Image (cartoon, rainbow, N blue to C red; front, top):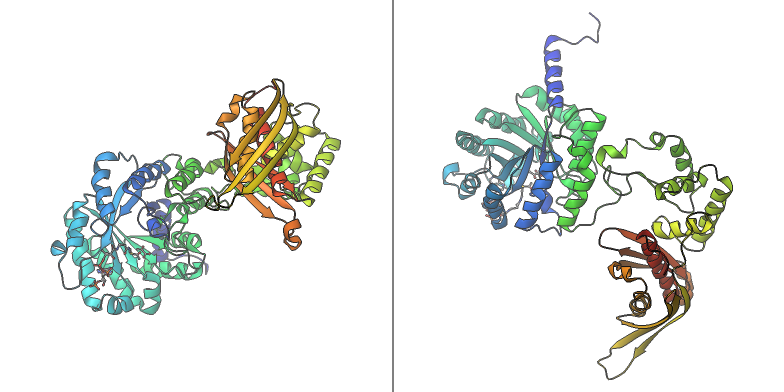
Length: 549
Ligand SMILES: CC(=O)SCCNC(=O)CCNC(=O)[C@H](O)C(C)(C)COP(=O)(O)OP(=O)(O)OC[C@H]1O[C@@H](n2cnc3c(N)ncnc32)[C@H](O)[C@@H]1OP(=O)(O)O
Ligand SMILES: CC(=O)C(=O)O
């Protein structure tokens, strides 16, 4: 026999690890641990709106909250039982074991878990002896009794019980014998899964591999992983646990959670499915994960994180010219997966770092075939580089780039919607009017319908100018009534110049369906804003199929 051959017991253990890996359960705790994030406050309606999205993603479990502790969570479970029709996921109610010195059936918290009618109950229990003695102020034996009694009681009522072993990794490193006895006690009492929690989030993948492997070898039953991200390793720690034999992963959508958050479940499942080849979501939920991530961001009212792996807006956005030149040959050369697998898109960013290939690919994205037009590509590349040197930024202003590109094209030029004769603004402070400052603007322009003069008022000169411009155009182009300025950003570029500095203005406009961004630059904030405002109207009219009138 060679020295690398595996023994019978080792083969059996390897088979168990393989089995666990092949059937990894996905447990979402966005509505409970995710909601512990600073600044997040989910209403019952929010939770009822998020749960179906998680079900659509295809997770196996949705932890809805802690009934009995948080009144909104009690209400969530009452309404979920009547209002939710989950196709894939089982609802889990979270709570702690009975208190020291008490029995589960007389513990109000445990009763609330039962009354939630959730088919799955997840119990948090201490597994670090220091926590047992100092936080619970009891002894190790009593904590084991609390675990055994509560698990047995709930299993006896027909519930699937999952035990979250809080501070397991820290506890195991401090006293492995005691931490293991918590796991064994839970399994012996009938727990379906024992989840090893890195509650303080400080573990590293190699530590997780070692601990999970040892626990795996010393116990029977399904182990899970619950990782926080304090060391920046929550996803890596979750994957390490699965590789070591954990068959259940917990996490939150978008990595929401207390302090630095939980393992981002979307990254975990994408890695498991696309890299390890383990199907963990029902149906093709992964291909919906970008949409679901953003839909949940809307409900939590937390802006999506652009650089989020897989589902972020920048996850497949390419800026460097050299990258673009290779991507033009084959996108796989600069992408780790096909973005379609997670419902995301590849995007080309045009900036001072662009080369001709970047412009060609961006043109393709915008519907222009620029292949083989070397002279045109060189000219547009140079214009972009010159403009960016002067302060413009096109990677945040696709609409302005399109107008620049079209200006260089023979076919596809921008129609001439209006000619500006003049514009002006003034700001007036009149003492005696409660310190009120009035802003007014006048715009004179010409359309096919004749000369238009419009005056606008606003809470500032740019707002007044926006009103005056719209007033001058709306008679000829009523379509602009749907256009709304939704974001306005100002940046001072050369801060050393004081009030003489160059100013960059970025504007985002929406028609209620799509949004587009334009940029303006000048030494005067109004002048820069005017450029961005007029470009936003021109791009909007163009993309609504309006002909010059
Ligand atoms: C690691 C995690 O994230 S676990 C989830 C944590 N989530 C939350 O805490 C959110 C919901 N929490 C709450 O609403 C409240 O803290 C409640 C209702 C649970 C408890 O509130 P209170 O009764 O006022 O107690 P308080 O919060 O001050 O202290 C917690 C109590 O639970 C006990 N406790 C803590 N963990 C456990 C456990 N695993 N098993 C049993 N008892 C526990 C503590 O010893 C303490 O008991 P004491 O009041 O006798 O000192
Ligand atoms: C249970 C849990 O949320 C934790 O240990 O972090």
